[in-house]
Image (cartoon, rainbow, N blue to C red; front, top):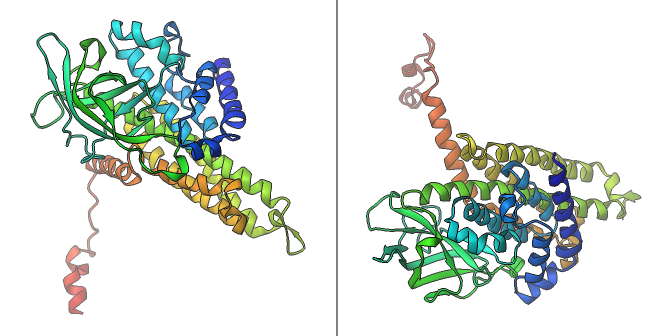
Length: 401
C-alpha cells in the first residue's frame, strides 16, 4: 500500500469519525446536502482520487482509490456514494474531456470546489439504458440542443455539473449514444421535487428535465458511439465503490453491536459472553472479511475483460451482506437497536438503498448468469452413463409408475 493511499485512507477515516458521524442526523433533519462537509473532503484530497496530479488530483489507480469509500462508509453510505459518483465524473472529465473542458472544470472538480454527478437512468427505464428518450440535436454551430428527462439523479440541484448520457438520433440501439457534461446553470435545465428518502434525506435525489438545453461541444466527454460503453464502465466502478462503502457500513454496525453487548448485563453475565451473541456477530465478522477481499479483487479487475463480472459479484454479495449485518446487529441490541441514537435503523435503510442503486442485486445475478452460460458453452458435454438413460428416469415414467 502506497504512502499516499495510507494518508488518504487516514484522512477519510478522520472525515467519517469527526465530520460525518457527529452531524449526519442533523443533516438528515435539515434535508440539505452538507456542502461545508464536502468542501472539507475536497481539502483532504478526497474529491479527485483518480484524476491526474497535473489537474490537482491524487493520481491513484482505481484499485487503490476505491478503498477510500470503505472508510467514508463508517460514517454514512449515502455520503460515500455521492462522493464516489463525483470522483467517477471527475475521472471521466479529466481523462476524456476536451482540452477546453479541462481548462474550465478540472481543478474545480478535483478540489471539490464544484461537484459533479452522473445521469443515465430515465423515468421509464432503470436498468434498461437502451430504452432512452433523452435526445441531443447537433446544431450547425456545433452546439447540442438537449430535450428529455433523467431520474434518480443524486446531488440534484446541488451539483455544479451533470455528466449526462444522451441519444443523438431515433435509431434503435446504442451506436448513437454520447456523454456530455451539462452545467447546472444552463438555461432550460430544471429539477422535480426531491424524492422522500427518510434515512438519507440530506442527499438530494430527483428527476432532471431538459427543455431545449443548449451545451457547447467543448463539453462532450464521450463522443457519439462511445456513450454506452463509457457509461457501463462508470457503472462498474460505481458498483465496486458501493461494495467498498458497504464494508464501512458493516464495520460501523458490528462495532455498535460490540460496544453495546460487551457491557450489557444479562443472565448473570455480559451479552458478549453468550455463545449465541458471539455466533451472530462472528458471522457478521466473517462476511465483512469476505466482502473486503471481494471488492478489492473486483477493483483490481476494473478495466480488464473480467471487470464487469467481478463488479457484478461484488455488487451482488456485499450489499446483501451489509443488509444482513445491519439487521443482525440490530437484533443483538434488542429493543435498543430500534432507537435512533444507536444508528442501526439508519444503517439498515442505507444498506437496502445501496443494494438497489447502480444495478439491483437481480441485475448482478443476470450478469453472473450470462457469464455462466458462456462458460458452460466452452465445457465438454456431460453425457448420461449407459444404463442410466434419460428415458429410464423421465417424468413420464415416474408419473406412470
